[in-house]
Image (cartoon, rainbow, N blue to C red; front, side):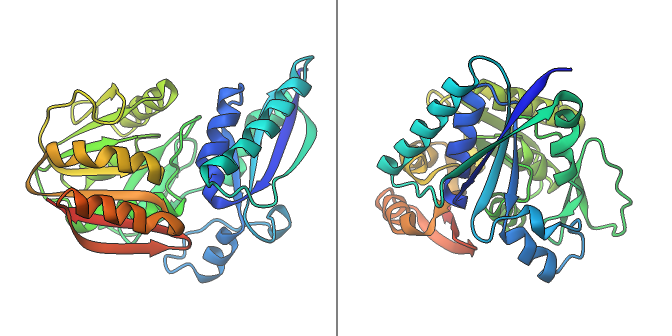
Length: 312
């Protein structure tokens, strides 16, 4: 039986996407997130749908990111690369928190199913429940939409604050028959939510090949093959489609590069929903939006994250 190395990194929530990308780039088959704030959600969950969590598995503050790499001759080299790349994130003003890295040997049979223990049906807003593809969900309310997700290696299981803020933005903005552009689609969860809210068509874009495959897989899982059109693309470069709504849940510095194209790709009075913004960078994003003639109509926060809804 093949052995694997479980790499556990205690870090900050702000570093989640960047470190996940580092791990995936070095051959990890997806990541597991243990977020200390999930314990508070469990205690204060207004929807009563969070799966019971074991407090012993969670850090006191921040998050644990777990990934699994082959326990072979290259492992120590990859571990050094992980440490170096995480340290380099500081140059981009991404806080890495405790940055404590530990490793544990696990067997293949254990590894294949280990991460699935952490992903159960979860009601993330009053109107949406996220259900992993291997779980069954007994629907209790007629007005609640079910999003089926197999996250694979792409960001977006629905439980992260930036994803929740994005979906809440979509809930308040999307109208029947809207055209949506989902920029940085990740797992495709925002595209799926948009269709369930009544959008006619979503054009989903991501630069990462793994994310594109994940968006397609989850689109198909929810049977929206004709309504969600997926393409590999660098933000909105070369895209000429006009949309009623553009939604993007990506890092603040990348959002800033997207703003001008978002304006050009929106119909008059269209909406631009931005998320993935750490609180420390909200003023920078707000200023860029206003410089490009956007009118910010909502500012929403969850934990240390900020989302803007801006109108053209």
